[in-house]
Image (cartoon, rainbow, N blue to C red; front, side):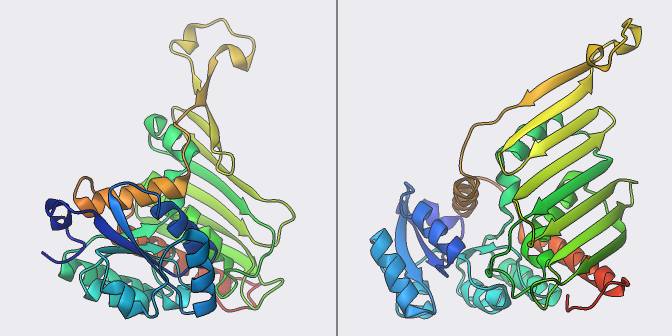
Length: 334
């Protein structure tokens, strides 16, 4: 079987895993993977030899001199290179039959993302996308209570930093929430309205989107990378109650009507509303994501965030970007 397929676990040897790209995110991929049981950490590759050497020394691992050198020694890789390089690097990985966890977004264009999905299907290997908020403690804790969300309000605000500014905030930050919205609502997108402006870069730095779904649900999503304070909050309204999730803290609350509330002689809201503090085991979301990827490679579970899901989130991101460009405030590239 090709490397990276479920046949790897059948050989009885550990899966050989490497990391491509050792910037801010890639460093943490390598940090976590090198300590995980049941795998052989095969090392790293970065196109910047000095950075690769620095990380290799810090983590006591091998820095390979070329992408090809690393790919000859692995069954699976995680890729955390700049977004414009995702498609090219991903195709090189999948073309060798190697399982791939690609950091979000899956690619910088929808055709590029679709090409990766096709190549993974042709080679029969795992393709997972790094939408790490799926593994957020608050999201995991809310899952048992979710029941047809009807309105979602998401705010993701961050201070400015140069990393990620090669693309608009829609692809850099908002795409996390677009993926969450698609997963939570699970309906076709009917309409997108958006606005946004560039402030510190030549791309859109703050954007707001109103997304209407075929089933009537609505999501209002705001993302900024020019805010003073860091905020990641998700509010969900559904027929059975209301969620308030703090994604930054991994905490959440659920408010729902008490059973038989119609018959209660209540004079205050708290007398008919039950407050549920949402709980889930504490764990680093990236660690959970990597463990999930490895289980999928071994054939122990389905991929949590498939290539198709990643492509769908990217397509919605470009619909938002197009809506921004059509708005009166548009003065930047998507």
